[in-house]
Every structure is written in C-alpha cells, then in structure tokens.
Length: 321
Length: 227
Image 1: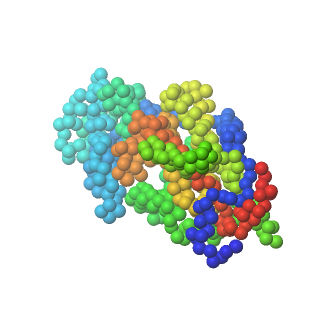
Image 2 (image 1 turned 120 degrees about the horizontal axis):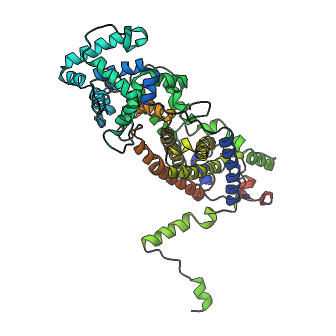
C-alpha cells in the first residue's frame, strides 16, 4: 500500500476526480452490439432447447372429478366456517386473533377487511342459487337454521366424512346433518360439470379477472396442496424459488425462502411477518452499505478486489520494482 | 476593441431560465465525452465489467419478448407454439438478467464501488435489483397455469401479513397485469436509466488504494495504454 496513513477521504478524493492516468480504448456501442448478439444467442438457444414449463392450471371441475371426497369435505368446512379462509382474518374477514402480529404491531388488521368473503354464502350457498334447478328445500332449511344448528350440522357431517371409508360421502353413517349433505352434493355435481368455476369467477358479471375466491377455495382443500407438494412448490420445500419441472424458478428469492426452513421462523405462527420484516431490514442494510462502518470496510479487509484489478496491481508492482 | 481582443473576452454563456439552467447542469455533469466515451481508464480491464452490460442487454430481451406477449394476452402462449417460444425467451431473459445483475452487484460490492461520490449509483443499482424482484414476481403470477395459481395462494400470506394484500392482490389477475406490464417496467426502466447515467457521470471507480504515485495514474507511462 502506498500510503497506509492516508485517510479514507484522501483515498476517495482520488476516486472523486476525473482519471488522469493511462487509458485504454473502449467502444460502448461495439460492446453493446456484441453483448446483444452473445446474450441473444444464449437466450434463444436455451429457449429452443430447454423451453419453459406450462403445467395446466387446476380447476374446481378437475378437483371435484379427481377427488370428490376432498371437495365435499372442503365445501362442508366452508359452510361451517371452519376452513382456512373462513378463519383467515383481514383482508377477507374479521376472525378474531387470526392475524400475524409482533406484540401490538398488527399490519394485517390495520389494512382492514378489504376483500370480504363469507365462505358459506360466497362459496356454497350463492353459487347453488344460480343453478337452473337449485336444491331449494335444502337452501331454505340452511337459511332458516340458527348459527348453532349450522355449526352442529357441519361439525357432525365433518366427523362423519372423516370416519367414512376414504371420506366417501356416499358411505357416511346416518346422522343429523341437516341440509348439509344435499348442499355439498349439489355443489359437487355443479363443480364436476364445470359450472362452479364460471359462477365463482364471474361473480354475477360478464367480465372478470379476479380469481381470489377460486384460489382460496382451492387452497382450502387438500388436493391443491398435494399437487404442489408433489411438484416441490410448498414453502417448506423452498417452493418460493422453485418452478414446476426442472426449470429454474425465482432463485433470487433464495434468502427469502431460506428463513422459512429454519427456526424460529419455521414454526412461528407469524413467520410471514417476521420474514418480510427481516428481508426489509436486510435490503435496507445492503442498500445503505456505503454509510455503514464495518459493512463498507469488508471489501478492504478481504481483498477480492486484488483479483478484479489484478492487472492494475501487477503493473503497479512492476513500476515500483 | 480589436477583433482579437473581442475573442479573448468572449462571454461565458449565461443560463437564466429553468431550461437553460438544466442544460448548463447537464453539459457540466454529463458532457458528450462522458456520455459516449471512446476510452476508459486502463484499470477497466476485467471480466467483471461485462456483467452490467449483460444485465442491460438481458433487459432489452425481456422488454421485447414481454411486449410481444402482452400484445397477445396472457393466455396466448398456452395455445401457440410461437407464443410458447416467446414465453421461453421471456423466462430465460429474466434468468440471465438476474444472474448477470447479481454478479454485477457483488462485483461492485467487493470493489467498494460507492467510493468517490458514487453512493447514489450504488443505491440506484440496489433499487433496480429490488424493483426487478417485484416485477419478476408479478410475471410468475401472470403465467396463468398451475405454477401461478400456487404462487398466488402461497404468496398471499406474506403480503396480507404486511397489510398490503388487498392492494397488491396476487389472485387478482387484472391488478397484477397492470403492475407487471405498466407500473413495474416503468419503475425498472427509470431506475436502470438513472443508474447508467450516474455511472457515466461519475466514471468507473478506480482500484482500492490507487495512489497518486502510481505510474498508471501519474500518466508517466501513457505509452502502455492499449489504444
């Protein structure tokens, strides 16, 4: 080092002023052109050889046809208000103590219920009323039932489905389930025929581009998650950075995904909030590295720059010898 | 006053309007030889320098393939072989964009490239990286296939826990489409453009501990230049 006693500002002063030393020819447009050709060839080559995955989307129809028992169990949970969506809290509903918090810090509640979803009404009852031949008696019985009756019917039917062979609705023991079996069976038929996808997505309108209800309904069942697990896409499988098949996904989310694999985040009920805040802090730290003593000095302590500018340092050493 | 004397006292151009002052500022800080240089300091000789250009060029391919995809709608590539190829180009451009950008970022970290008044260059570079992550995330949500369905279901929790899930609703295709093809590309483009302009304004940072006594710096060995 030429001047070990030199202060940082002195050394940076040299970096501040225009370079007056030796120069080399540099053609910006030529480099741009060469880069366009080289990178273009790599991209086109990878696109032609490897391509991109396109696993067909899951529909309520394909779910109902592939796993009717899971569909009926999920529809029962939506009716009884015991599904994941029903107990999610904001922005879908006001379920108490459902939000992710750090002490009193509760951003989820702060946003309020912006996308209200009543799972029984929106995902089961209202779609059934759109049928040409709705199960009117069962719908009337449901609407006339008290909250306690509805909870008892759905709880009893959920238990019966759990105890039935393969969860098969056709094999449940007899019991007091109210109109629930008729409603869920009608919804299963509606979904199997493809009508439920259209009704849920359209939301009584011709145009729609909002799939919130359908995605949430799918996610409340086991079928959707099982498919994701088989494709290595779930959170505990580093799924955030994976893609279907063997194509690389969002590998730049590796650190975000990493925290979900280790404690205390892996089992924390507020893991999402913790990880988001942690990544926010780390991103700010990296952005403000020039101002942070220690972090900004690491490049001086670990001289990787000697490799990057090895020609410069070699010439300098030769010039002094 | 003679002609020769008039030439000696030729007045410096005065900038007295906002436009004029802006022109003066630009001419001072970003003259043509800085914007489009024909040479660079001799230390600008390392493979690390190609990755910034690699990221910019990848971004060009992202934009071009993205425009073709958006002109045909998000479901086109499911039913068209050419559409699927363009989708593949879009995907691999993004992969290369991030790969080159990350190498560029860490290269600049180990070069402590924020020295000499280049702090904003570093910050805009980080900004480009972070905004690009959000842009890519919305792209994955627009695939309109199983992957995007699952990402929407899985991704909603972090956004809802942060209190922004209703306004950045990953299951609302129309909302995400707007973010992906308008707002975020504009943001990425603006931050990258500002970053590149700052690089040109301040020049490439000299090696750590480069000293005035270095022959390469004092100019006594200019004959070694490769031009």
